[in-house]
Length: 162
Image (tube, rainbow, N blue to C red; front, side, top):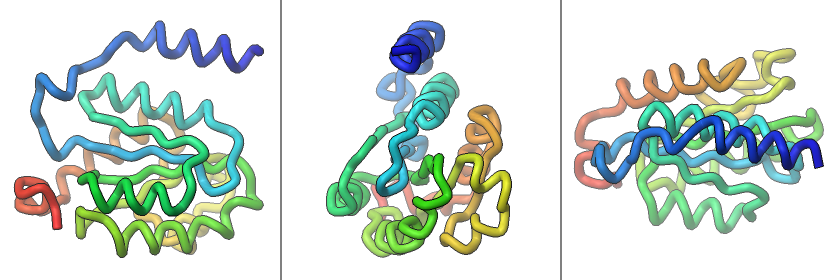
């Protein structure tokens, strides 16, 4: 019940943020997902809210199947995918998921960010799962997202991806 209240407060305190449709910046698209089997979602919700306030169009997929995530990145263009991981036991399932997303993504240059305590405690895992970056908190996640966008080739998102 407490988590439900926190989620409600986060939505209300965050406001609506920037309206993606009004900005029309096609490259500012992010897909945030929970790692396969993950049940902790509050951190991902917080990152999504911070990204929206920074003008990003964010799609959140909590508890989505691998097939659904693959179809999503195949059908829609995203600058990056962010995985939220709360438990060490879910890390082993992440590398195959990241490889599949990279193979299927409409954006050939898609970046992958991972977050959660496990990556703060064991930074070497970021590269081992095949991710490009991690962030210690939601503000850092926004900074990493901006860095990812700045490094994308202009044609990568101008044409709608690959």
